[in-house]
Length: 71
Image 1 (cartoon, rainbow, N blue to C red):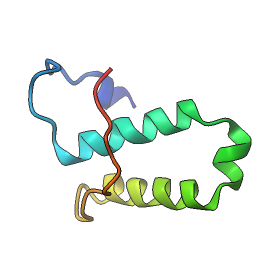
Image 2: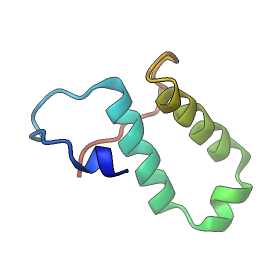
Image 3: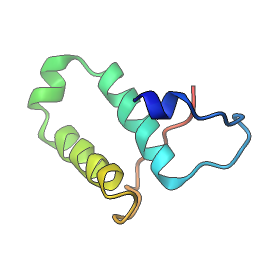
Image 4: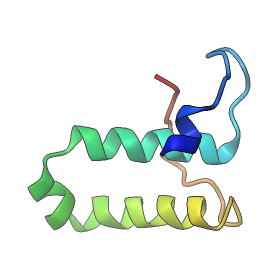
């Protein structure tokens, strides 16, 4: 988390694929209540796919619905 907060990019600069995924995951975790995050099978699968993408540094294709943007 600390490494992402140190990114010094303007909101108009191009995103890397993994950055879209990171901001999408952060938004989802912040947006949904804990019980939904724990119980919604489709949401959990989406987040697991996103985390796989982040952990493998983009070896997985960008998930289709990842529209994360910088705050």
